[in-house]
Image (tube, rainbow, N blue to C red):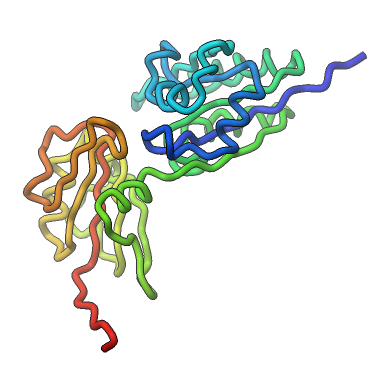
Length: 238
């Protein structure tokens, strides 16, 4: 008798504060025994520490570290994705679900998405569970809106867009993945009239807020995010 294959869940655990995890994310962790965690050592991963703050019993689960190096070597990246998918598929073939926890939301620049494509191509079922995005949490921390009325919002991987004039569309910007090239990103922003603020380690105990472009340090940490908004004077109805 064939064993029904398990489901691979990509579960967003939010930006950092365990209280920002969804009820569904917590339930899936509690109900399943196999938890995949991005990183070499599961217990040291940020996603694991967040989840453990909301679901302490995760420590009793079977933790599966999934290491995918952040490099530019396309072949090494492809190989790491394949190895990660193969690891997860072994559990799915046993009929066990796998909950892959990931920072923020499972649909925004998410590590799991690369594995998801491979799993689905191999005939496995996957499901994405959303989490609070880093940029929504950062805007809330700064006590500002991301968009109002008819304003567009552009979410940009700043690591790949640091040329002068890159921010030429009307509307507001979220600049993600900017830390490794922060000096270049700041230089790019200096040519705009945008109101720039940033948050480092959003919703964590080490959170820092920067209220202007000049305040943002060139060596800001990996989990740094910039919000750049158009300067507009809002006329309130009397």
